[in-house]
Image 1 (spheres, protein in one colour):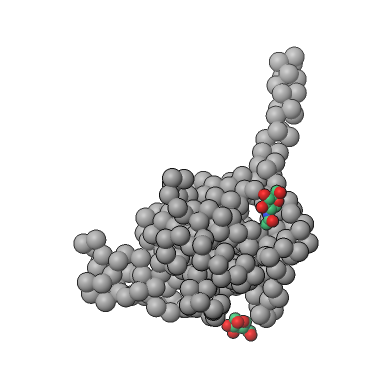
Image 2 (tube, rainbow, N blue to C red):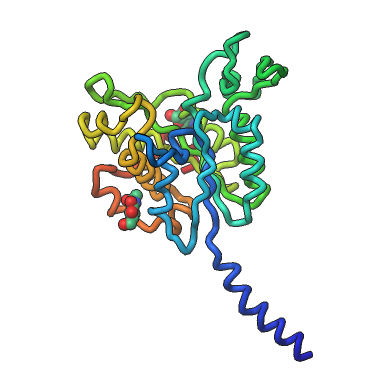
Length: 282
Ligand SMILES: *[C@@H]1O[C@H](CO)[C@@H](O)[C@H](O)[C@H]1NC(C)=O
Ligand SMILES: *[C@@H]1O[C@H](CO)[C@@H](O)[C@H](O)[C@H]1NC(C)=O
């Protein structure tokens, strides 16, 4: 009796501690998001996300890996590994596109190129000495999203960061590349906000911030090529993502972000960007 009540008291003490443990925001993506060696010139934006999230509510697990596409992240079991690590209440951010284009013609498959298209098309290829049935970008993202939802997470599908929009000398960003479209399509087809799947137009927010920064500041912060950012610009990319998240309706954006909307929109990050139409799951 005595021992039982002691145990009950102990359990009652531990219960709130356990439920107060921060949830995890898992990040799936490529080099533009991944941890890079601090001794190099570049850094990925995922390394900065934690600074805009309430530390008592969320911790970040940056599972992004350089050189990966939606296809190679799938084939290497990396979405599976994140789904296994997910606890109910966690979030997963999925952002790909930089490594997903290219050719699947014989001898040219690099293991990353997706099958062209937005639907359920498949392509057969030979990679690494094996026959591989390659899916489209939205198919890979929807399959990963279904795994995360089943594990109790909510999901943010985010469009890729732009390459340097000032590289021609004047600002140029169309916002119409197909992986941007595929990203919101996948979020919408995976169930949208009703199922806990949100889209962040990260590319558009990052382009807006870089337009406001101006040519010199942006050029100075692509130290290696037109894709990879300096630590400073990686932080800007992270903040652009956070603004996009906060301008949407997800609980992660509404309660997880420590910054007020005005503290972000009053800076060079710019304003909330309205949805292109009502079918965008923002
Ligand atoms: C939010 O505030 C924190 C703490 O001041 C800061 O480090 C972070 O960069 C801010 N994030 C944004 C998106 O402004
Ligand atoms: C919504 O906007 C997207 C992106 O601009 C477009 O591709 C899509 O066709 C639009 N959908 C509807 C129903 O208008």
